Every structure is written in C-alpha cells, then in structure tokens.
Length: 198
Image (cartoon, rainbow, N blue to C red):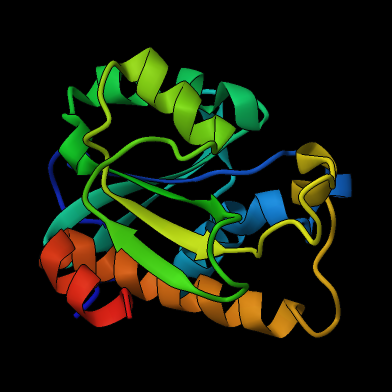
C-alpha cells in the first residue's frame, strides 16, 4: 500500500503534527500531535530531521502521493507560521494540509477524524486557521483527556505529562492516527472517518 521510495513530482500533501519543541515537553498532552507524526514517520520509514519552513521536515510517499511530514518548531501558539510558509511554497489548498493534534474534549487514547471546523480552543489550530485564512483543514484529533477539575489551569493541564496508565493508550492512539493519516491521503477523509471515528 505504501511506498518507501519517494515518487517523482512535487509535494501534493502536507501532514503536520503539532507540539512544542523543547525536550521538557516530550510526553506532555500538548505534544500528542508530535507523537502521531513520529509514529507516521516510523510507519513510512522516513526521518523528520531536515530544517525547513520553521519545522523539522521529511519527505515520504503514501500511495502515489508525495507528502511532506512537518513538526513545526515555532511553539504551539505560532504553528500557523510554519504551515502558511509551506502551503505557500507548494501552492496547496487547505484540503491538502492534514493536521494532527491533541484534543482535551476527548478521552485519553481516542482518535477522531474531521474534515474541517473550528479550532475548538486548540491554540495551534487557531493559529493555523487565522494565518492561513481557512478552517477547511482535515484533521486527526488525539484525545488527551479533559481537565480533572473545572478550576484546573488549562495551560498547566495540556503541558502536564501522561500518567503511566495513560501513556500506552496515547502511544496506541498515535499509531492509529498515523494509520488514519495514510487512509486520508490515499483514499479520503470520509473513509478515515468511517474507520477511525468510532
């Protein structure tokens, strides 16, 4: 189904995992998008280590499509800067830019595929929508759990690390998110929604 060799021609999809770049953020809820992107890179047998578009990047193939995997290094709240730069370079519409990110409204380990929509309070997605002028980005959301108490500080919650019990669920969700990303690119968002958004 997937080719390890890069196809000829220009990049026709961007797949962007959202997160924060410093080591101290590894394993935090806000970095679930990075974890999914890393799972996808492993699945496709590519390295995401080339610096371009304010991101770590790697080219790969999914079916007949040439894709650019991106991990923006702008910090979450400025993710749109990296996405806009790459979109403009490759002249891609939002429908060809797939975003992988965390969602606090979903239980830990849940995967949801959506065709478009608002940021839902996710600051990285909000930056992308604002700077790129569209909300038509397909997305794969990884559930990281809601705040344990309404008064709990949101920033503290999304920057907290997963518990030992949660970590395996998130790792599994990252792999399923990677599978969903491949299905979106090779088939359609509808196919991925039917298979993964249960």
